[in-house]
Length: 257
Length: 379
Image (cartoon, rainbow over all chains, first blue to last red; front, side):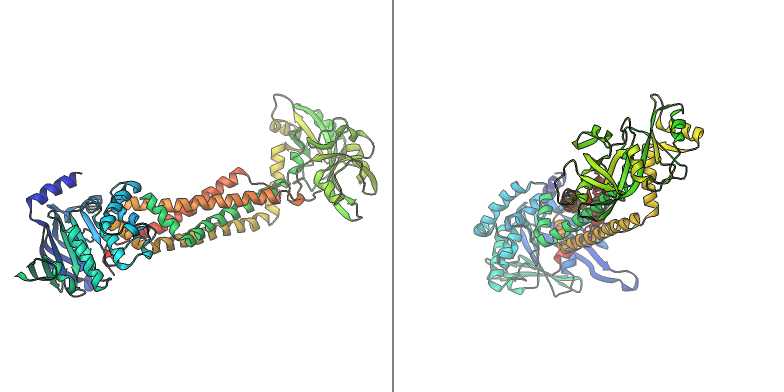
């Protein structure tokens, strides 16, 4: 609760949902030590969808893992909604994640033993809700996502697009301020990928939310408000896009790093 | 979260059944083998159990068990009766005799001769007939299982005539006795009658059974008898235990049954440990997802332990049910009489099942605790 109140007041005071400063990440030690992030500085604005793009192995996944508090940075700081999560330890970062972050994964990562509605309800259950009450809320959200007739099915009975809708419902059901999405369209065909991005943009990109999408699928670039390009563990450029609709990406401002 | 843990557990039915069967098999094996072991060694002291009136047993100093006996002189009975603290003392005869069965076959049987006057030494439970009829010449009582073995396929009835060492023996009562280690046929008769059936030497008295006077413990009285007569004397429980110890120390029974029990425990640990570890390993990404979206390590530990506890409880219950059914069914067979499942064996096997489950859970828990939640971002 304290985290919530602080995050809300801090977010109102800041225009940036996420601020990364000098993020360095090394893997291994001694001679085997390998630096995968070389002092990343990045600001992700609130009320916008930010794409993190770049070739495979450039450090995108490592960066979002650090932003999400799943990996520890070797150096640098990550501030989310005004709170520096790189300083949080143990249970605090876990609670922060449960309260403020929603995740959408490339492989959907739905639990095969749970029905669609139960999968969508998991984020609420993690926060302490009973499965029954969480399922009521999740069911309403799945209806909004066009899953009325499929919400009692199990993941293996759903198509890729339907599974991604369930994953989106799971990421949003607890109303998080930040949604982190890793390659949300990589496992989908072009049309389904487009539909999923439309949906993500519609339900996730509120004025008080920030959406971070890691992708190298350039077909969905038009959905981005900002595109941060990474290469060899560094941010190469950060480009703001001004567009009226998703199929018409046009005016852009490029910030070179 | 715990309902999610349960759904994860029951989702893969084959694995769940495998885990449950691992625990059930181990529990069944432990209970069945230990039940048989306890039933078997209890038979070594069965003659003592069948004389509940007496609490002191007197015998030759060299006697180690109920089957290797050196007879006492008749005068020893008077000496024992004269020892302070002895309320009463009566003779007891025990010998193996050969009997010809109804269809002409020979069988080894046990003959117990009890005090002519008091009939102390007879099992307390009479199933058929009047025990006072035993005072008639040639009268014997026989155990129910013994009757069925001597007169196969015939209804249990009084008045049957057998040959004990070529002498006539008429069945006047059917009694319920404790199953013996060496023979399943036991005849009871008066002491004087028993001597006629055997007649194999000057000294015939196998044991003297006595009762401690009020205010005296059997141990005190036994000590007095030892000091004053030079004979070996001990309380009923001590003698029963001595007979059991003899079997434990001089037969391969404890080692062979102990090996099976140990194998049951080992198989339980190996099967359940490996399968539970495999179960957790296969669900590792699911645990990582739960961890990534904000489930604490404590909650994950709770989930793993709950899953393990459910497997343990269901497996233990099934194993115990199987063992109980085994003793219920097999116990009806005359040769299996007296075998049962002691409560402490069931409780002990519950402890073993719990230990197996805790070990399996601890082993698997490491993976859950140390799983990198960032793997959820890897394709």
